[in-house]
Image 1 (cartoon, rainbow, N blue to C red):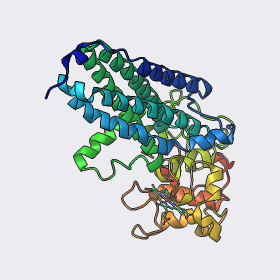
Image 2 (image 1 turned 180 degrees about the horizontal axis):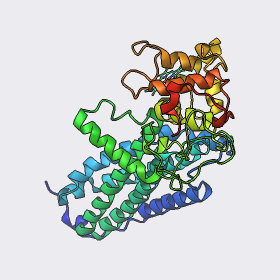
Image 3 (image 1 turned 60 degrees about the horizontal axis):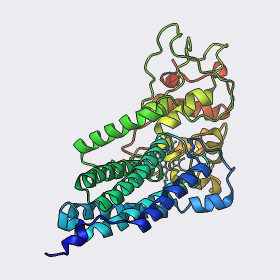
Image 4 (image 1 turned 180 degrees about the vertical axis):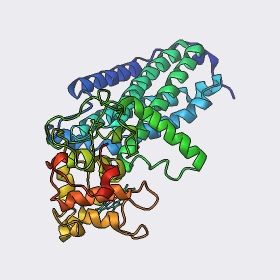
Length: 386
Ligand code: HEC
């Protein structure tokens, strides 16, 4: 294994590489100035050319993933002096390609988000971690070029620390992006039990940073009714619907007595009783992230439009006729029936929740019916705000 040592020992100048890198960083910054990362992009305000490019995000993202994985392997070979001599330039090129791919993927991703509707914890973490990871990879690129020019092995170690750290952050961000397109359980669903609880716990912990202050995705227009929890005469008991902390939070307004709530509370049947049930038990598959059977249940309008079967005269909700409503049919079907929802093995509806949903459809499936006007059957009591 011989190589001309004098060539290695002389500090190199890398004008071309520096130029390419500075251009790359400038493109990144310019791109971010034109398309600043938003966390609640308005719907339908972007030009179609922006959305056209944005839709390439799922393709573009494979470029940095591939390049940076290859680079990770190359960096192991570059740990020795002779390894760096042999593979250093190739590693630098791969790093540049990976960084450029990250910049492209991030910018396309931001453009894609301009379609609107990208909110929620998975999106927040995806966008934030991808941005930090990309900035880190660009920083790593600069350190590597400089370290190579200076033949400085300490700087080279610093570079590797920055690179692997940034790539780790980026991968974590990519995972939350995967959650957005495949559903939050995609990766963990078939994990071995001990691993699964750890993975799910980690995810929940991370999501808790960005999701806590959010109320359920309620879009029904109504007078703001949510009051702070504390001034309740007696502390509101734990909500009966349990799921991810943010998704549920059934607006814990103090309602002095259940069925029927006395006049004076402006709570709505749909918004305060029905929607929180769907949010907790159905929206993982029929929400903003995923629409199984083309059905979204996270807003009143979407719920009424229905899913793929709406075309075949099977309406998702038939006001006044629960037995003809596909949603009711699905929740009352026997658990081993293909039609049964939520699918076997998922968090099931309680009899009280089924009864409450059934009553709401029977009473006309209204978006504006007041809780104080509702006559819920006794068995629905547990599903009502206490
Ligand atoms: C774990 C994922 C999951 C959950 C949770 C879930 N569903 Fe589904 N749902 C599906 C899948 C998958 C389909 C499509 C079934 C098919 O095409 O055969 C579907 C289809 C449907 C359909 C038929 C839509 C149509 O027009 O064809 C209805 C209605 C429905 N679900 C209601 C519900 C309700 C109500 C809940 C909550 C109580 C719920 N689902 C929870 C996965 C889920």
